[in-house]
Image 1 (spheres, one colour):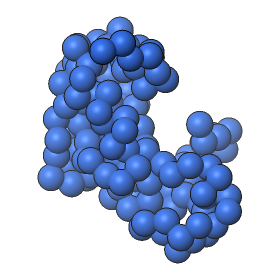
Image 2: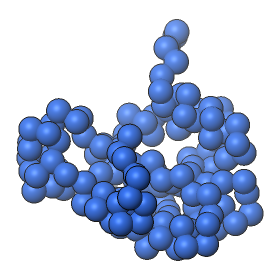
Image 3: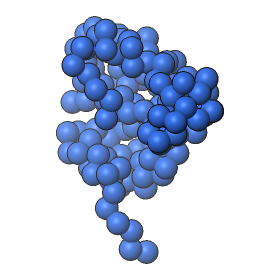
Length: 139
C-alpha cells in the first residue's frame, strides 16, 4: 500500500529525531486518526495509560531521563485531566510535548454540539495556557 506522508508522520519523525521512543496517552474521540500513525510508526512505541493524569506524569518521568517526552490527549476533558501533570513539568522546565486531538475548526467555530463540550466551540484549557504564556496560540 502506498500511503502519503502526512503532517502526523512528519511530527512523529521529528519527535523520533529528538530521541522520543515512547508516546504516552489515552485514546479519545478526536485523536484516533493521529493515534493510528503513532501505532504504525517504526521508531515510536505507544504507551496507553489508564487516564490522562497518569499519562502526563508518565511523560514527566520520561522527560527526566530522556531528551524529551510526548503526551497525547483529546480535546476538552482529556487536556483538562492532564493539566496537573503538565503543570508540574512546566514548573521544572521539563521538555514535555503535549499534543491534543481536536475537532475540526469549522465545527468549533460554528458552535456545533461536540462530544465533551457545551457547544461553545472553545477549549477549556486555552485560558489556562494563556495565563502561563501570553504569546501562546493554538496550532
